[in-house]
Amino acid sequence: MNLSNLQPAEGSTHNQNKRLGRGEGSGKGGTAARGHKGAKSRSGYSKKIGFEGGQMPLQRRVPKFGFKNINRVEYQGLNLDTLQALVDNGIVTDTVDFATIVANRLATKTEVVKILGRGELKAKLKVSAHKFTATAKAAIEAAGGEAIEL
Image 1 (tube, one colour):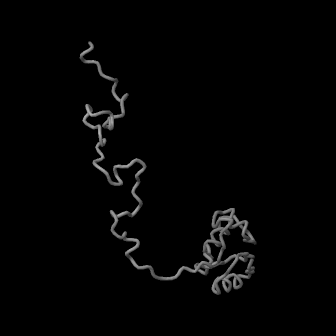
Image 2 (tube, one colour):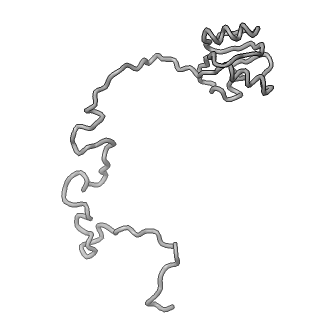
Image 3 (tube, rainbow, N blue to C red):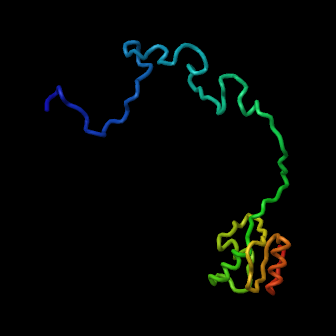
C-alpha cells in the first residue's frame, strides 16, 4: 500500500452523485445541467400529480357520472354461520351483543353491524345488532333465540 493506490474501505462511500453548480471548471456549472429557463430550471419546482405538460389532464378530460349519497350507511355484515362458529368454539353461550362482536374483532367499535342470513344457526341466541335481514331474523327466532335491534 502506498499513496498511489489508497482507496476507501468497501461499502464506506455511498454518494456517487454529480456535483452540480460548483463552478465552470467542474463541467456542471452555470445552469447546473438544468438547461435554460422554464419551470424545471427553477428551484422549488415539483410537478403536480397527473400534470401533462399543460395539456388537459386525463382526470379532467374524462366525464364524471353517477351519484354518491353522502348519507349512505355502510354496514359491517355478520353471517349466521359466523355466530354459530362462535358458539361451536365456546366463545359465546347465550348472548351476542355489540361488545362481544367487537371483542372478537368481527367489527370495530365505530362500525354499524348488520346480521345476514348465510348459513344456519342451531344455538338459541339472544343477538343484539343494529340491523337484521328478514332471513337472519327468522332463522334466529326459529332456533328459539331473540333478535334485538340497537
